[in-house]
Amino acid sequence: MSQAHTSAPSASGGGPAATPDTVRPVRFFHRGEIVSLDDVSPTRTVLNWLREDAHCTGTKEGCNEGDCGACTVMVGELHGEHIAWQTVNACIQFVPVLDGKALMTVEDLAKTDPQQPAAAAVLHPVQQAMVDCHGSQCGFCTPGFVMSMTACYERHQALGTQPTRQELADELSGNLCRCTGYRPILDAGQRMFELPVQRIDEAPIAAALRSLRNEPPLRRPDFRAPRTLADFAALRAAKPEARLLAGCTDIGLWVNKQFRDLGEILYIGEVAELKAIGEVDGMLEIGAGASLEDAWSALSRHWPAVREMHLRFASPPIRHAGTMGGNIANGSPIGDSAPVLIALGASIVLRHGEAVREMPLEDFYVDYMKNRLEPGEFVQALRVPLPRASQVLRAYKLSKRYDSDISGLACGLWLQLDGEIVRDARFAFGGMAAIVKRAKGAEAALRGHAWNEATLQAAMAALDSDYTPLSDLRASDNYRRRAARNLLQRLFLETRPASPLSTKQISVWSDIV
Image 1: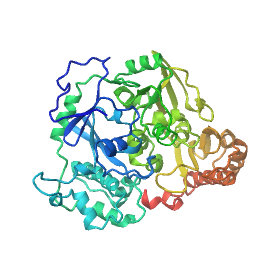
Image 2: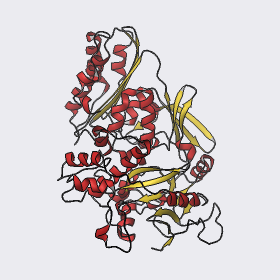
Image 3: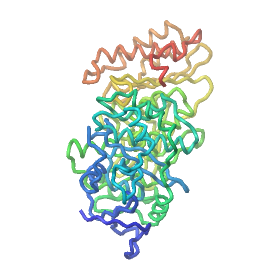
Image 4: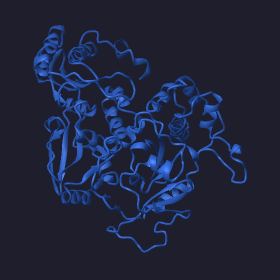
């Protein structure tokens, strides 16, 4: 692999001026300089590049599928004059998506003097806290923990705040440790704020990223990254056979685990218009390129009942990289986004060239992993109704682990109440069929009836005609059937007109969310 480094923040590297059609190197900031890669494979993972090419072996390979967090790194993007740092899993991120960004690994944290031996390095407060609190035994997972904690440290230092112990646990939900145990690591997370402050020196990084802004959109053999919605739509229409890439949290496994050839890739992550989230015509509009973290945060602000589902959707590194649009387009029958969005009555906006169409999200799915996307078409946005008076929503997820696990069963349950009468209902379950689908029999059993125990029992019985669940490694058909009925009962207990129970009375997890 041909690789060049330049310490000066030069955009062109002294070569001829690039045009939008020029095939150019992938350029990003790493270890104090701009790295330029002119023949990197479009599916070369950041982890493999770090370990095999950059010889930065602090970042470890554990599961190689984004579950364990041993490969956690920080990626920074320039937002105005400041850098926004996010943790991602290096094992399922492709090197070209680093273009124009900054990459930080565990090797970047300790302050070193080239004239002094390595033993004289001054540890970063996160690293020193891990030493002080005995937060590492075998040490294999430690670099990943340290990077997640560093991102937390930077964010809270910028705000002048300190996280609670539970907030620290949420930050580390994508990092697994098999020998130390989490108590001393959480102790270190609190201890790091008691040590002398040491922030990342962002000035040289920001200068380099500003220079990289002058680069034309990235074009590589088999990899294109347009920057405007119009350019992306035109390119997609012209190349309907190309593979769309968003957060790489699913496609990355196709490469790592299935060794699939992706062919030509169209990357959506540089289109700012597709990352936008805002209120339009009384709807919350979420661009298809908006990260899962941003999308769930927006939903949580309007519908606080989805907060637990937000925190339990994968892990922070996955939510930072993955997109809600990609999760919906992927169409997994156990995906956590679709049940909530369908219950809320969301619609999906599809685009082909200049043509735009919109349909109810529940109509988008045809069969297992099949949807209504036409060749050359892509998901542009999701539109979610904003809450109105007398509407209630609950989102429940059942899985074998609380954090960072695939659902055995997930649901979104929405009611429109008029006093004690159910005027409307939308229930959507994932894990109960080949696609996420509405429980229309249970809904019908509620409409126009008083929200009481008898109506609840009728709705629970109707669920048996709505679904014929399968057994798999995550849950048996009988468990899913019984659990779905129980979740309806939980909905009733939390929302019944007389003496509704609080979440703390219903959920054994209420103290940690």
